[in-house]
Length: 335
Image (cartoon, rainbow, N blue to C red):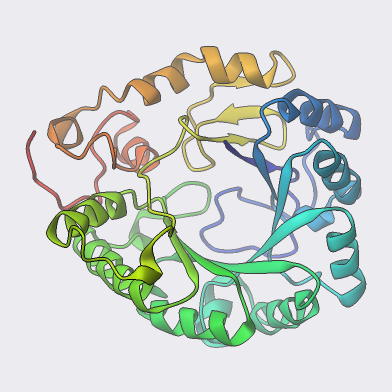
């Protein structure tokens, strides 16, 4: 299980598509240190991986106490940051408190593309931050793909290799928070980009993953059928895309304790101030519906609905129903 935990809504940047609609100050209703530690104790029995996210999590004053508490409980801890606060001293603290990996967000392989979305100077600041992580903690690059930067997939992979990243994760934008429909990639272009990413996976040593594009699971299944038994030795054991995991193997906890299937799907399953996370995970009608996958429209008729499932967040953004068809899918296959 993976839990993405939005520990604060505060951020020093103001990215144009920000899911959290983050501002410079934390919200009044954010979980206290006591509540946050209790939440970690609740979920420790599940032994999840927890991603400390935001906003900018390094703006939360007790972030290292929370990370240390989680790691000491046997939880694998990752930190999702914009990289601008990383210094050599900060990198040592990150390593010392048990954070296993840091993801740094870059939305362009050049300052011009990145800064147009994330703010002037953010690219150079993030690269300086990344340089502080080298030799102390493993890191990856997270890139949110929009119409502004979708042409820089290969360049981002080149940059990640140059920087010494362990992985690159491509996020296909969902129009939530400050994200707008007009920034979203077209269905046809998503298919082309997924094909390009798939080709890059075959020739790069980097771990490459996609998020909010579960169609990759269908494409990989098709490829495996065409080339059954012909995979190169280097591809064995590589992690395959598994379709939409929202509510199935993934949950999102907001800064005020609300639980959602993912950070892009605002269909509330419960709140940890009112119920335990385990009770919400096991009993929420929202999460049960996602697991049952009684999907509608083209997604319901598709033979790949169990391994892909479509992006439930994008379906919700487009129709108000998270069981409806993913508008970015071009597939018309029947049962």
